[in-house]
Amino acid sequence: MDAILPSTFLFLGGRIPPNPYRIVARIRGNVCLLHGAEEERARVLRLGDRRYSREGDLEMSSKSRVQNSSLAWIGLAILVLSSAGLFAADTVRLWEEDVVLPTYLAGEPEPNPIFYFGRMSQGAEGRVYPYPLYDTLTGKKVNKTYKMVYLENEYVKIGVLPEIGGRIFSGVDKTNGYDFFYRQTVVKPALIGLIGAWMSGGVEWNIPHHHRATTFIPVQHRLEENSDGSKTVWVGELEVRHRMRWAVGYTLYPGRSYLAVSLRIVNRTPVVNTMLCFANVAVHVNEDYQVIFPPSTQFGTHHHKREFINWPIADSHYGSADFTKGVDVSWYKNHISANSIFAWNYEDDFVAGYDHGKRAGTMAVANHHIVPGKKLWTWGNGPRGRMWDHILTDEDGPYIEIMVGAYSDNQPD
Image (cartoon, helix red, strand yellow):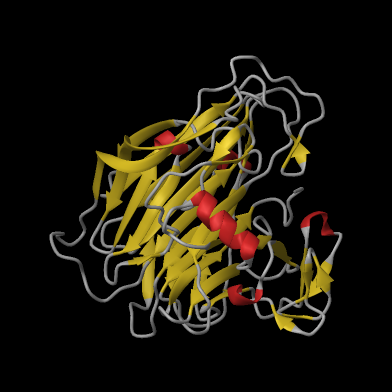
């Protein structure tokens, strides 16, 4: 018998209002990614039976049911005043296009099956078989053609790469040119994924394992045109280790400045399977970048909840860092070494990142009863972090990951 899991998320990004609590969301079994929202911008967005207002306290009414067969993400809403040229009102474009990206080639996969002998990956069992192991990087840089799927209206343009795990590759606010996701200009893998090759940037879907097996190889995709004028790109697969299915649908609506994302996970087996469900959202950072946990957050915790830290002013050793002199760890510039911080917060519905120099950022808002995970991860800006900048990109600079997780507020790694 199929077991189907429902969930809800909400992301906000771009020009975030000074007080994130001044956004009201009435959500029924869905998740939202919003991008934008200055004080003078549109006060109310409507999407079906979901209402987003810009005043008052955050409200959430979730009526998700298992038979809904969806983990729903509604995403990337950018509230803007101006419209971009070449687009009539209420028009959405959906198309496939060959794009050429400089690419460091991964080598051929290991021809022999890799059976399980206790290997770990991201804190969990690193079972590879029946997938091949991609553990060779050639270092050879070539121009490679990919089939990119684009969704675009007058406010936003989204690029999706089914050939590289179905990730969101790019997201841009057309009103100001701001990349609200980390935008790679090169495909440069490192040996970080479950079966080897992995690349940074964009939005990676970690289902059912962190840096999952197919994060760097092709998945299925399908294009849909909907009766309300919206258009959808579906990406997904049958995960052959667990024999479970998952699919993510990216939907752009006419005249709306957000991307709606619906997520479905189906256990089609007669046995219980372990599962992780985190969205790995990468964003560009600099010394002006600050991570915003909800104001009621007083503590952060590490993987496995074995270490705790005061938030935002840390005054102890944590991970490999010494914060004993009192450090505001919400700022990227204050992290010299790599670290993970999960918000110890079971009552609020958002996590955000904000670039004070560019006056723009990204926020995730979700029903905390179903989507409690809120995480900051960074390589750090010290020598080791700069080393990873060089390993994972040529010229695109540092990034952090603002992760959002369903069904769990922590990860095993």
